[in-house]
Length: 298
Picture 1 (cartoon, one colour):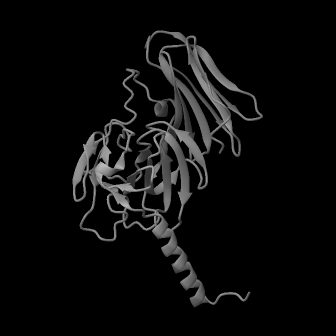
Picture 2 (picture 1 turned 180 degrees about the vertical axis):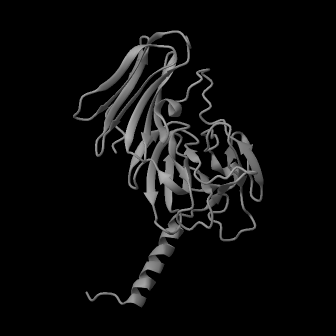
Picture 3 (picture 1 turned 90 degrees about the vertical axis):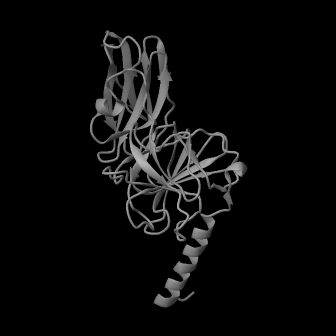
Protein backbone atom coordinates (compact mmCIF):
# COMPACT_ATOMS: atom_id res chain seq x y z
CA UNK A 1 0.00 0.00 0.00
CA UNK A 2 1.53 3.40 -0.95
CA UNK A 3 2.25 5.95 1.78
CA UNK A 4 -0.38 8.65 2.32
CA UNK A 5 0.45 12.16 1.16
CA UNK A 6 0.37 15.03 3.66
CA UNK A 7 -3.15 16.14 2.71
CA UNK A 8 -4.55 12.62 2.77
CA UNK A 9 -2.90 11.96 6.14
CA UNK A 10 -4.45 15.09 7.63
CA UNK A 11 -7.89 14.07 6.37
CA UNK A 12 -7.47 10.60 7.89
CA UNK A 13 -6.40 12.02 11.25
CA UNK A 14 -9.34 14.45 11.25
CA UNK A 15 -11.78 11.63 10.51
CA UNK A 16 -10.38 9.53 13.35
CA UNK A 17 -10.62 12.51 15.72
CA UNK A 18 -14.30 13.00 14.86
CA UNK A 19 -15.01 9.30 15.45
CA UNK A 20 -13.19 9.40 18.79
CA UNK A 21 -14.95 12.57 19.96
CA UNK A 22 -18.34 11.12 19.03
CA UNK A 23 -17.62 8.02 21.12
CA UNK A 24 -16.89 10.23 24.13
CA UNK A 25 -20.26 12.03 24.05
CA UNK A 26 -23.18 9.66 24.70
CA UNK A 27 -26.79 10.66 25.24
CA UNK A 28 -27.39 13.07 28.12
CA UNK A 29 -29.72 12.15 30.98
CA UNK A 30 -31.89 14.25 33.25
CA UNK A 31 -31.59 14.03 37.00
CA UNK A 32 -34.76 11.91 37.11
CA UNK A 33 -33.36 9.40 34.61
CA UNK A 34 -29.88 8.89 36.02
CA UNK A 35 -30.39 6.38 38.81
CA UNK A 36 -27.07 7.56 40.29
CA UNK A 37 -26.45 5.85 43.62
CA UNK A 38 -22.92 6.84 44.64
CA UNK A 39 -22.67 9.83 46.99
CA UNK A 40 -20.06 12.22 45.61
CA UNK A 41 -17.84 14.69 47.42
CA UNK A 42 -15.92 17.52 45.79
CA UNK A 43 -12.83 16.38 43.83
CA UNK A 44 -10.56 18.71 45.85
CA UNK A 45 -8.75 18.86 49.17
CA UNK A 46 -10.71 19.33 52.38
CA UNK A 47 -11.85 22.92 52.85
CA UNK A 48 -11.09 24.07 49.28
CA UNK A 49 -13.82 26.09 47.55
CA UNK A 50 -14.13 26.29 43.76
CA UNK A 51 -16.86 27.26 41.31
CA UNK A 52 -18.81 24.42 39.66
CA UNK A 53 -20.02 25.74 36.30
CA UNK A 54 -22.63 23.77 34.34
CA UNK A 55 -22.47 25.72 31.07
CA UNK A 56 -25.56 26.27 28.97
CA UNK A 57 -24.48 29.29 26.86
CA UNK A 58 -21.24 27.78 25.54
CA UNK A 59 -22.15 25.54 22.57
CA UNK A 60 -18.69 24.00 22.16
CA UNK A 61 -18.63 22.68 25.74
CA UNK A 62 -19.26 18.94 25.55
CA UNK A 63 -20.93 16.86 26.73
CA UNK A 64 -23.90 18.95 27.93
CA UNK A 65 -24.32 18.64 31.68
CA UNK A 66 -20.64 18.24 32.49
CA UNK A 67 -19.09 20.52 35.11
CA UNK A 68 -16.14 22.88 34.69
CA UNK A 69 -14.52 23.46 38.08
CA UNK A 70 -12.94 26.92 37.99
CA UNK A 71 -11.18 29.54 40.12
CA UNK A 72 -13.00 30.89 43.15
CA UNK A 73 -12.15 34.45 44.13
CA UNK A 74 -8.38 34.78 44.39
CA UNK A 75 -7.83 31.00 44.69
CA UNK A 76 -6.50 29.75 41.35
CA UNK A 77 -7.40 26.13 40.57
CA UNK A 78 -4.33 25.37 38.43
CA UNK A 79 -2.17 22.66 40.01
CA UNK A 80 -4.75 21.70 42.65
CA UNK A 81 -4.85 18.07 43.80
CA UNK A 82 -7.70 16.09 42.19
CA UNK A 83 -9.33 13.40 44.32
CA UNK A 84 -11.86 10.65 43.62
CA UNK A 85 -15.36 11.86 44.43
CA UNK A 86 -16.44 8.30 45.29
CA UNK A 87 -14.78 4.89 45.61
CA UNK A 88 -14.25 2.58 42.63
CA UNK A 89 -11.68 1.52 40.06
CA UNK A 90 -9.79 4.29 38.24
CA UNK A 91 -8.66 3.97 34.62
CA UNK A 92 -6.07 6.39 33.23
CA UNK A 93 -5.97 7.67 29.63
CA UNK A 94 -4.31 10.34 27.48
CA UNK A 95 -5.66 11.75 24.19
CA UNK A 96 -2.68 14.06 23.74
CA UNK A 97 -3.40 17.62 22.60
CA UNK A 98 -7.07 17.00 21.74
CA UNK A 99 -10.32 16.23 23.55
CA UNK A 100 -9.90 15.28 27.24
CA UNK A 101 -6.09 15.33 27.20
CA UNK A 102 -4.92 13.50 30.33
CA UNK A 103 -8.05 12.06 31.93
CA UNK A 104 -9.35 9.49 34.39
CA UNK A 105 -12.56 7.50 34.50
CA UNK A 106 -13.64 5.97 37.81
CA UNK A 107 -16.11 3.10 37.63
CA UNK A 108 -18.05 2.92 40.86
CA UNK A 109 -19.52 -0.13 42.58
CA UNK A 110 -23.09 0.75 41.58
CA UNK A 111 -22.15 0.79 37.87
CA UNK A 112 -22.04 4.59 37.57
CA UNK A 113 -18.94 6.44 36.41
CA UNK A 114 -17.20 9.77 36.85
CA UNK A 115 -14.67 11.45 34.54
CA UNK A 116 -11.92 13.95 35.34
CA UNK A 117 -10.30 15.63 32.32
CA UNK A 118 -7.62 18.15 31.21
CA UNK A 119 -5.30 17.00 34.01
CA UNK A 120 -1.73 18.24 34.24
CA UNK A 121 -0.49 15.05 35.90
CA UNK A 122 -1.88 11.62 36.77
CA UNK A 123 -0.73 9.23 39.50
CA UNK A 124 -0.63 6.38 36.98
CA UNK A 125 0.49 6.29 33.36
CA UNK A 126 -2.07 6.11 30.54
CA UNK A 127 -3.37 2.55 30.25
CA UNK A 128 -2.98 1.94 33.97
CA UNK A 129 -5.66 1.36 36.59
CA UNK A 130 -5.99 1.18 40.36
CA UNK A 131 -8.56 0.77 43.13
CA UNK A 132 -9.47 4.06 44.77
CA UNK A 133 -11.32 5.14 47.87
CA UNK A 134 -13.32 8.35 48.14
CA UNK A 135 -10.60 10.98 48.46
CA UNK A 136 -7.79 9.05 46.78
CA UNK A 137 -5.51 11.36 44.79
CA UNK A 138 -5.69 10.69 41.03
CA UNK A 139 -3.90 13.72 39.55
CA UNK A 140 -3.63 17.51 39.43
CA UNK A 141 -5.58 20.24 37.63
CA UNK A 142 -4.16 21.49 34.35
CA UNK A 143 -5.11 22.40 30.80
CA UNK A 144 -4.18 19.37 28.69
CA UNK A 145 -6.10 18.33 25.56
CA UNK A 146 -8.63 20.68 24.00
CA UNK A 147 -8.62 23.16 26.88
CA UNK A 148 -8.29 26.95 26.72
CA UNK A 149 -7.38 27.55 30.38
CA UNK A 150 -6.66 25.51 33.52
CA UNK A 151 -9.79 23.92 34.97
CA UNK A 152 -11.16 20.48 35.87
CA UNK A 153 -13.73 19.00 33.48
CA UNK A 154 -15.95 16.65 35.55
CA UNK A 155 -18.79 14.31 34.58
CA UNK A 156 -21.17 11.98 36.39
CA UNK A 157 -22.52 9.18 34.19
CA UNK A 158 -25.10 6.43 34.59
CA UNK A 159 -24.22 2.75 34.24
CA UNK A 160 -25.57 3.04 30.69
CA UNK A 161 -23.12 5.82 29.86
CA UNK A 162 -25.52 8.81 29.79
CA UNK A 163 -24.30 12.06 31.32
CA UNK A 164 -26.26 13.34 34.31
CA UNK A 165 -27.16 16.90 33.28
CA UNK A 166 -27.80 17.93 36.92
CA UNK A 167 -24.96 16.33 38.88
CA UNK A 168 -24.88 16.49 42.68
CA UNK A 169 -21.65 17.04 44.62
CA UNK A 170 -21.42 17.59 48.40
CA UNK A 171 -25.23 17.44 48.42
CA UNK A 172 -25.41 20.44 46.05
CA UNK A 173 -27.14 19.91 42.69
CA UNK A 174 -25.75 21.97 39.81
CA UNK A 175 -28.29 22.05 36.98
CA UNK A 176 -27.79 23.31 33.42
CA UNK A 177 -26.97 27.01 33.35
CA UNK A 178 -26.01 27.16 37.03
CA UNK A 179 -22.70 28.16 38.61
CA UNK A 180 -22.23 27.38 42.30
CA UNK A 181 -19.35 27.73 44.74
CA UNK A 182 -18.89 24.40 46.53
CA UNK A 183 -16.63 23.71 49.51
CA UNK A 184 -14.98 20.29 49.74
CA UNK A 185 -15.34 17.91 52.68
CA UNK A 186 -13.32 15.27 50.82
CA UNK A 187 -10.57 13.63 52.94
CA UNK A 188 -11.35 15.81 55.94
CA UNK A 189 -10.84 12.80 58.17
CA UNK A 190 -12.20 13.89 61.52
CA UNK A 191 -9.97 11.53 63.51
CA UNK A 192 -8.58 14.38 65.59
CA UNK A 193 -5.02 13.51 64.60
CA UNK A 194 -3.16 16.78 63.98
CA UNK A 195 -1.07 15.17 61.23
CA UNK A 196 -2.03 14.22 57.67
CA UNK A 197 -0.52 11.42 55.55
CA UNK A 198 0.92 14.04 53.19
CA UNK A 199 2.63 15.87 56.06
CA UNK A 200 4.11 12.62 57.36
CA UNK A 201 5.51 11.54 53.97
CA UNK A 202 6.62 14.99 52.84
CA UNK A 203 6.26 17.35 49.89
CA UNK A 204 5.12 15.87 46.58
CA UNK A 205 3.28 12.84 47.97
CA UNK A 206 -0.42 12.17 47.42
CA UNK A 207 -2.65 9.43 48.85
CA UNK A 208 -3.50 6.72 46.31
CA UNK A 209 -5.02 4.13 48.66
CA UNK A 210 -5.90 3.56 52.30
CA UNK A 211 -7.41 0.98 54.64
CA UNK A 212 -9.29 1.37 57.90
CA UNK A 213 -7.96 -0.02 61.18
CA UNK A 214 -9.57 -0.14 64.59
CA UNK A 215 -8.07 2.97 66.11
CA UNK A 216 -6.58 4.44 62.95
CA UNK A 217 -5.95 4.18 59.22
CA UNK A 218 -3.01 3.12 57.06
CA UNK A 219 -2.21 5.08 53.88
CA UNK A 220 -0.26 4.38 50.69
CA UNK A 221 1.10 7.50 48.98
CA UNK A 222 2.98 8.10 45.75
CA UNK A 223 5.28 10.87 44.56
CA UNK A 224 5.05 11.31 40.79
CA UNK A 225 8.18 13.48 40.86
CA UNK A 226 10.68 11.02 42.35
CA UNK A 227 8.53 7.88 41.71
CA UNK A 228 8.74 6.83 45.37
CA UNK A 229 6.05 5.07 47.39
CA UNK A 230 5.35 5.92 51.03
CA UNK A 231 3.30 4.23 53.77
CA UNK A 232 2.17 5.84 57.02
CA UNK A 233 -0.27 4.66 59.71
CA UNK A 234 -2.18 7.42 61.53
CA UNK A 235 -3.85 6.81 64.88
CA UNK A 236 -7.33 8.09 65.70
CA UNK A 237 -7.40 7.00 69.37
CA UNK A 238 -4.98 7.41 72.29
CA UNK A 239 -3.56 10.45 70.52
CA UNK A 240 -0.45 11.79 72.19
CA UNK A 241 -0.01 8.57 74.17
CA UNK A 242 2.64 6.09 73.07
CA UNK A 243 0.91 2.89 71.95
CA UNK A 244 1.93 0.13 69.47
CA UNK A 245 1.61 1.17 65.81
CA UNK A 246 3.39 0.09 62.63
CA UNK A 247 3.70 0.71 58.88
CA UNK A 248 5.40 -1.40 56.19
CA UNK A 249 6.15 -1.38 52.48
CA UNK A 250 7.35 -4.33 50.41
CA UNK A 251 8.22 -4.11 46.69
CA UNK A 252 7.63 -7.43 44.97
CA UNK A 253 10.78 -9.56 45.11
CA UNK A 254 12.47 -7.36 47.71
CA UNK A 255 12.72 -7.24 51.49
CA UNK A 256 9.98 -5.58 53.52
CA UNK A 257 10.74 -2.22 55.16
CA UNK A 258 8.92 -1.64 58.47
CA UNK A 259 8.61 1.07 61.07
CA UNK A 260 7.18 -0.38 64.27
CA UNK A 261 7.11 0.99 67.80
CA UNK A 262 5.12 2.88 70.40
CA UNK A 263 4.14 6.25 68.99
CA UNK A 264 1.80 9.06 69.94
CA UNK A 265 0.40 9.91 66.50
CA UNK A 266 1.69 7.79 63.63
CA UNK A 267 4.13 5.14 62.36
CA UNK A 268 6.30 5.82 59.34
CA UNK A 269 6.96 7.23 56.93
CA UNK A 270 8.28 4.13 55.19
CA UNK A 271 9.48 5.07 51.71
CA UNK A 272 11.03 3.16 48.82
CA UNK A 273 11.37 3.28 45.06
CA UNK A 274 9.74 0.42 43.17
CA UNK A 275 9.98 1.18 39.42
CA UNK A 276 8.16 -1.43 37.35
CA UNK A 277 7.16 -3.35 40.47
CA UNK A 278 4.01 -4.07 42.42
CA UNK A 279 4.01 -3.32 46.13
CA UNK A 280 2.53 -4.91 49.23
CA UNK A 281 1.74 -2.44 52.01
CA UNK A 282 -0.01 -2.21 55.33
CA UNK A 283 0.26 -1.48 59.01
CA UNK A 284 -1.28 -1.88 62.43
CA UNK A 285 -2.70 -0.06 65.42
CA UNK A 286 -2.58 -2.30 68.47
CA UNK A 287 -3.94 -5.70 67.44
CA UNK A 288 -5.77 -4.36 64.36
CA UNK A 289 -3.76 -5.04 61.20
CA UNK A 290 -4.03 -4.64 57.42
CA UNK A 291 -1.91 -6.27 54.69
CA UNK A 292 -2.63 -5.59 51.03
CA UNK A 293 -1.99 -7.98 48.15
CA UNK A 294 0.74 -7.02 45.68
CA UNK A 295 -0.88 -4.16 43.76
CA UNK A 296 -0.45 -0.57 42.49
CA UNK A 297 2.19 -1.67 40.01
CA UNK A 298 4.22 1.33 38.84
